[in-house]
Length: 467
Image (cartoon, rainbow, N blue to C red; front, side, top):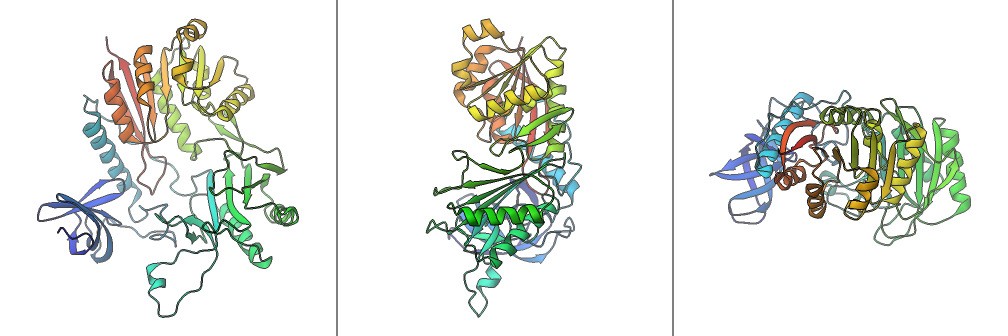
C-alpha cells in the first residue's frame, strides 16, 4: 500500500473520524475516507498514502449504511457546502459531539469536566443570513459529464466554487441554505445576463463584467444585495440594478461594488448605495444590530442567540462586573451581555468593525459599552486599566486560527477571574486552553451546532482562575 494513488476495493467503513471524514482499516492501516459514513462498504480512491495511514474518497458503493438518509439537494455530491445531507440530523449531532470531546481531550491535554450535550439547530435548512455567489465563464463539469463521448463546450456558471478548484464554478440552480429568495435573486440575474449578453468573469484572464453577488437576509425581513462588477459600465450597471428592483420587491438595500483587482475581497473597496439606507438591521434577542455591506455578523442568527445565551450563562454576571470583549467585531456579544454588566470594553483590530460596534451601542441606547480599535497587547496597558478597570470577565471569540500566543500571554498577565472562550474551531480552542492551563481550570464546555449538514462545530468554554 505504498503506491501514491490507487483504489482499495470493498472497504468497510467502521467509524467516524473527524472533519466530515469516516475511517476504515486495511491490514491495520487506517484510511480516512471522504464521502462515506459508518456502515458503508465502498471502493476508495487513495489520494494520500503514508506509512501508517492514508486518505481517500469513496467512488463506488458496494453496500450503503442503514444510517443513511436521502439527500434533499440536487447539487449534493458536487457542491462542497452541505456534505452531510446523507446523514439524519440526530446522527450528525452525535458525531459532532464525539468529535468535540475527542479533540478537546487529545489536544487540550488538561482535566476536563463532563462536556455538555451539543445544542441542536432548530432549523436545518434556510438557516443562513448571508450567501455569496460567484460568476465564472468556466462551469465545473462532473466526472460523468467529462466522460461523455461528446465534448461539452465551455459554459458560464453562477454559484459556488468547486471544492479545491479556484477557477471553476458549480452552476447552482437551488440552494437550501437561505429561503427561496436566494434562488429567485440568483436565477433572475442569470436569465437577465443571458438576455442581455453580459460577460461572466474569467479569473485567469482577469476580465468579464459580472463577478459576485452577496446576499444578506435578516430575520427582520430586511434584504441587502451587493452586486460586484469587474469594471464600471454605468449604463449596464444601472439597467441590471433597476431590473432587480423591479423583479425582487423584498429588497430594502441595493448596492454595487466595482472590483478591478485580481482577488474577490471587497474589504478594501467602497460599495456604492443604489437604493435604500446602505445597511440592514438584524435582531439578536432584544438587541438591534446594524449590518453594513462589509460588517462581520454571525451567519446563523437564531443559533447565534443560543451561542450568546450560553456565553451569558457561563459568565454568570451579577451586574457589577467589567467585561472585556476581545475580537469583539461589531460588538454583538458585548452588547448581548450589556444589561447584566457594569461596563463593556470591546477591542478589535479592524477599525470598521469598531465603528459598527459604536453605532450598535448607540442604536440600543447602551452608554456603558466602550470600543477600541487596535491590538489588545498594545491597548491593555496599566494606564488603560487605571482608567477603565481590569476585567472581571474576559470574553474571547477569535477567528478559526485561534488566539495569538502573545495575546494568551497578555491574558495570563491580566488574571481575570473568568474567561469565556467562544470558538468556531475546537482544535485551536483546545490548543489555547492548554496554554491557558498555566493559570486556569476548565469548568464547563458547551458544543453547539451552528451549521447543520456540515462538520463544523462551535464551542463555548468557561475557564476560571486557579486559587
